[in-house]
Image 1 (cartoon, rainbow, N blue to C red):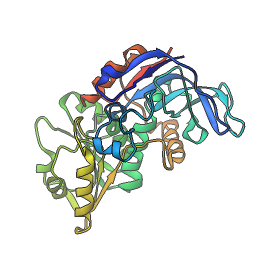
Image 2: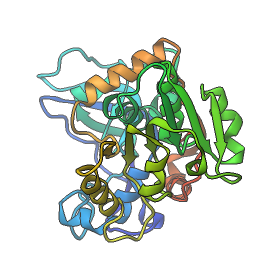
Image 3: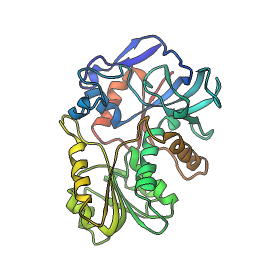
Image 4: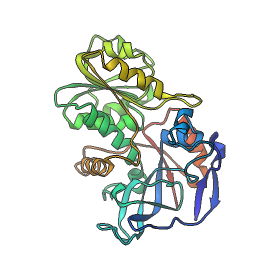
Length: 329
């Protein structure tokens, strides 16, 4: 099969299209014929082994990538199921977390897959897993946003942000989205009652206070974020960061946890959704919102499998509008 493989850490050029063997299916696993795979900041973190501290904890591999085939989000058709798998069969259309998804075939456990909503294309479906689940956790699980509350999403035009705005709106919260000029109308169309163009104003200068802030960007000091949070409000910091750091977002997350111990406000870090934790329930929750017409994937652009390196470079620059997706013929 064709797959995007990396043998060392480095820039997008380390990603190479090669011919390799199809994954073997274990008893509790499912082989998926990948039709589309989303590009995430997670992918460039894995590609670069960044931040360096993640190598020491085993998150990315120490001196070389833990997984040679890149990618994590996928949508496609079930090709084969293991002997112990129930509820899925060959031909089923699915989406979910599939390590090694930048390939014609990827193998994963059945609990990391759910049925693809019929209303979605494979490209739209691939854009769902990490972005939508991270947004769900940030807004609903950790942020505990409720009807009538003021919710601010910083980075509202990005992969997580576009989902977060819609999820908060579905909870009947009063949503404010912070984004660039080109994304203002998009964010408003997704359900934001108010939109702040960060190129023209700083949302931390406002007199408005928010019950929940989901910060996907990390470009404002914690003290500034706290000043626009209600006295008992919740700040949810979504891990991320730019490349080339020893500690990356880990340092700011530790600072957040330390300050949280001394204030009434709730300061909560959240790492992007990955193939661990209660992802099956979360995937079911986001697909239910999609089927109810309350959540729509925003696909920025698509790349063929041959151009994955270019797609990762685009996402790494931090200006993706919604999600970027790889198509697999």
